[in-house]
Amino acid sequence: MTRPIIVFDLDGTLVDTAPDLMDSLNHCLDVGGLPQTDAIGFRSYVGFGGKVMIERAYAAQQRALEPDEHDRLYSLFMDHYGVNIPGKSQPYPGVLMALDRFTQAGFLLAICTNKTEGFSHKLILELGLNTYFAAICGQDTFAFRKPDPRHLTETIAKAGGDARHAVMIGDSQTDIDTAKAAGIPVVAVDFGYTERHVREFEPSKVISHFDELTLDLAQRLIAAGQA
Ligand SMILES: O=C(O)COP(=O)(O)O
Ligand SMILES: [Mg+2]
Image (cartoon, rainbow, N blue to C red; front, side, top):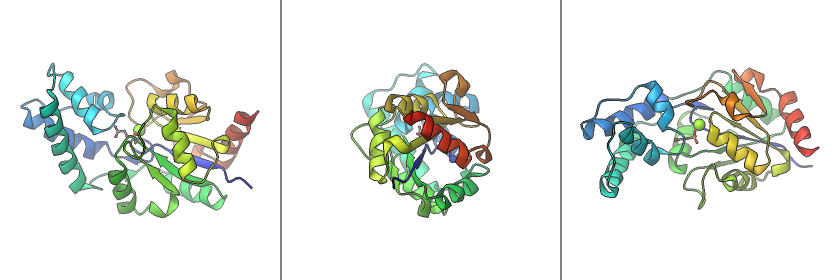
């Protein structure tokens, strides 16, 4: 029998990493002599990995980056963020129970994130969540990344799942666009990192707590996707 699969985004969905990502981004702004960002700015920079985040944070302060400077700042960011993992980052309320619920029901679980694969593994390991996931695929796992739907479909394949029996859970337009392009139902959490409310991107369902991610909801979305 095909095991259904739930694929989670990481930053802003499974784990609240904003305090640590912001610390590292602010370190990079500091180095360039720029003022620190706040939580609102951060939400408009995150979603496509650290390199894009730095570029956007600099651009927001009218500073274009030469490739060399951009590379140097990115490497500073990676060093600063990497040594600190897991830092202050915590799974969102209800995550552990949801992972247990779906594991016990026979679902496969996986992560599809635009964080690097190495940092994602480290974070999940440090938080004690590594045993739950059949695959953790980052921005550098394949030759493509979200919103390219192949990042999601290849994550599912790597986990041993089937895209026709899958649901994506995410916090951003990137996640919703990716899942839609792959023809996979998508549940959006409304507590993550997005400039505009996730409902505007028309996911299959919006939830405000992981307790709302029930077996019944996942099964219904998968069944509707197959209709
Ligand atoms: O780190 C980012 O920019 C985005 O990461 P995510 O895909 O896990 O949300
Ligand atoms: Mg996210």
